[in-house]
Length: 119
Image (cartoon, rainbow, N blue to C red; front, side):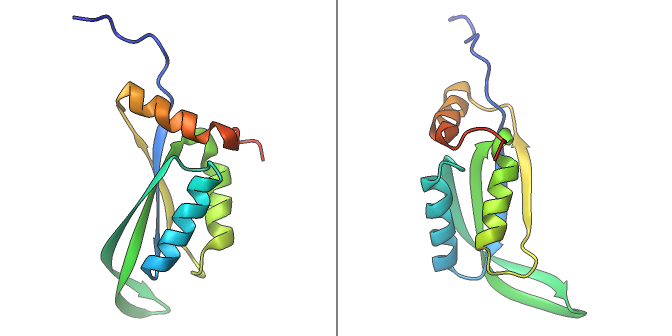
């Protein structure tokens, strides 16, 4: 049995938002990954039920799940808000852990160009 890897595992988070169509989700995913704010993005079609302006809504949306470092959340949120078509976008993060060390380090490598939480 090999010894555990002593390299600290970066804190990886999943940031989720929803968008009105696949093209908007793809555009935002490409922009955030190309800027190094997210290591990768996954897009899935969902159906959402919610109350808006006092009326019950039910519509198709696209969930965008982004994997990044916790330190980048503030900058990622700003970038999502700036590009998002919704008046009130859902933007939330969840810590992922434990995370397979080599994968966590890959996420870190892919987002290092974006720097840390200092804008």
